Amino acid sequence: MTGLTVRNVSYAYGEKRALDDVSFHVPQGAFCALLGPNGAGKSTLFSLLTRLFTTRQGEIEIAGIDIAKHPRKALAKIGVVFQQPTLDLDLTVHRNLSYFAALHGLSGRQAEGRITAVLERLDMAERATERARDLNGGHRRRLEIARCLIHVPSVLLLDEPTVGLDAASRHAITKHVHDLSSQDGLTVLWATHLTDEIGPDDQVAILHCGKLLDQGICRDITGGAPMQDTFLSMTRAAS
Ligand code: ADP
Ligand code: MG
Image 1 (cartoon, rainbow, N blue to C red):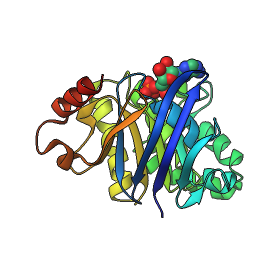
Image 2: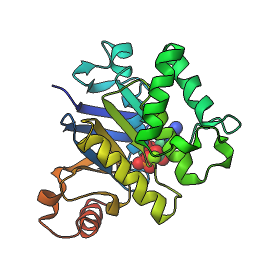
Image 3: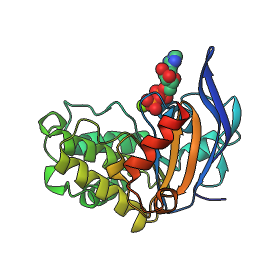
């Protein structure tokens, strides 16, 4: 199966169970919000999806590739934006991208082509020579998203990419990433606790205290009610 598949994944920090038998599937080209309050286990799942932690229980497939059996092949398909920003603030936008391209083994010529393409895709072309430090929060986040596209991944993982941004930047980034799934066919897993970032046609996986409470198309889960109401009543009932 292509897209992203998580099957019966559990994870504990010592005695603390952070994920409890979590299973869901994101079809190729879909945008899926991993919706959960603080402490739900979203970042723990991201650590497993990116092999920061190895899976002890359960299976993960990235674009149909089992991450435990073929880790390098699976990881090459992933573009990731972690919760904590990881830009080099002293480097220019272009240098941040060319450094990352080199890490992925792209030649200078390939890298230039990809840098131009990803900056244009994120409406950042005119900022190539600016230092990352001089960008506002929204543009820094956009640069991180551009960077995670350099090696042409098929699955994007973004861990609360809009936290701390103003409403306009949040809206721009949410739209850019929705476009990457609907127009470019990328599979997206977008961790958030903010229900207004989710459209009625998006996939949603609702995580609470390490357990998956529900999964499916947003409009089917809410039955047309606001996602915020559904989310609050589900998480309250499960507490
Ligand atoms: P989220 O990203 O949804 O806020 P996390 O995955 O960061 O959730 O955390 C899930 C649970 O695991 C929380 O209860 C958190 O306190 C706990 N946790 C996270 N990291 C660690 C760690 N390194 N050691 C022990 N417990 C942790
Ligand atoms: Mg987190």
